[in-house]
Length: 210
Image (cartoon, rainbow, N blue to C red):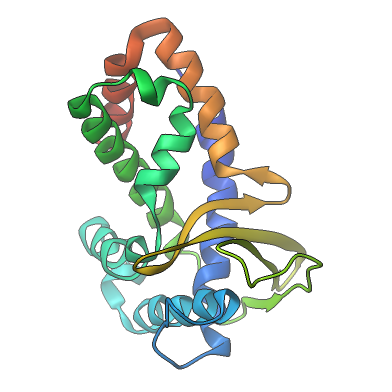
């Protein structure tokens, strides 16, 4: 089966990760997962941006190095297990513990692969700014809105949904120009599970991650 929306979301994820990386231009502090959500997003991005600008292997497209950067500087701030659970929807409750583990690992590999493509496209001309929101950032589940501006390109809106966990803020969903990550993958996951079961979805993800 072809995951038709995967290629679409990969393009959108490029914009989202560029936002995360570019946001570092606004901050030079360590991410504080217990501080304000918007400042946390910008500070977390700063760490990734510093590496991207100085790491020749990343700029050269070294896959192993890119995956390492994603693992070290991006995924620690993402609750990919919750992202997987929400993307699987009602099928998550039907999965065995092993299937839940294997699906989360396979989806994690998908996110790493998707994010990796974005990291090589960040340049010094990319800028990001926070967009004012009417929603409060004082709750335990918030949306931080940003806008990316680049040379010779229209601004792109990117929103990040975060939740407050015992370890602090974690990003678990991303919206690029009105398209949410979880919603897109949920449709694809459901179609694959209906055709080939949960194991079939895990196999399909792993095949694409190779």
